[in-house]
Length: 447
Image (cartoon, rainbow, N blue to C red):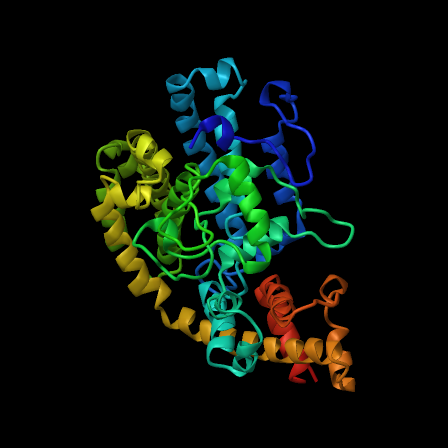
């Protein structure tokens, strides 16, 4: 892979080349990507989507929106630090093509900002709930009406693939959705493969899948433009990652490791003294003991250690990327950056505590159960009404249900796969609160 291709400013529908040296630095194309994402309705609804604690009523627990903003800040820092070194290593990128270190930061920040945009309500349990509706629920009856890959898209519903679809899928009057640069779309794509074969290798890029069958052709166009390396281990469509995708992943790993842990402390799910001991292990090389001992409140102590921890992990991610850049460019680096971190033991300890104390807490489990019930009921109601309308068998109740469906999702789709995916995407873009509200309406609980 070559950096001058990987940093492509091309957008869907472009008929001429966009050259970096001709860009207006006051309105750089990669920064336009960030702006388009942050002003999109799909991003805005992340304010009422679960990060760790579903339906939390406290004002300091992170939502998907605050998490995404924080990941983008960390990603911007990592991208700029990497960009500075890449431009020194390959001076022609700046001298001939006009790229600047901030370009790397802008691409990574935009991709980080969008990294959770396709996640359904109720966190990762929302993805599983959609998948299980088709794998073992009422959606099983549609299996024989689509290809194996289309069926796998549904039974293994993936927020990353859904995110790519949200960012790129055209609809009448809106060509290419947000029309982001191909560099940002490639960086967004952590898993550049189809849903089948599932986990064909142990490489990190094959862990999940990154695009639905309806989007395969456009992703191939993006991959070709960027010069992504074809993964010959896969029988059909699959590539190795855009190098900057490793930085998006690292920024996400850093934030959820440290900040989810911080939420657990603030919620009282993790004892402060116990938690601070683990954070101190992570920052013992950089902590100012005098300053730390002068902090009087739990909040200030946690904030200080969190900032130091994130700084340490940012520098480590940058070091790891630069040390492995040639392997990454060849597609032969097969793990996440933080898997090789010098702090891996401390990270693993923190994640283990978070799993036991936060992710498996009674509050989280109870609300994930609610999420399953809500999502299955909504899928049942809207899929039944939508499919019945298309085959001209809708009941009056179906018509009433369809009146709750936003206009852009009422468009008739030509195949059963596209019909089902259309409703799944509608459900995926509900907030936690809106999903529960619709559930109550459909089940007459609002009477």
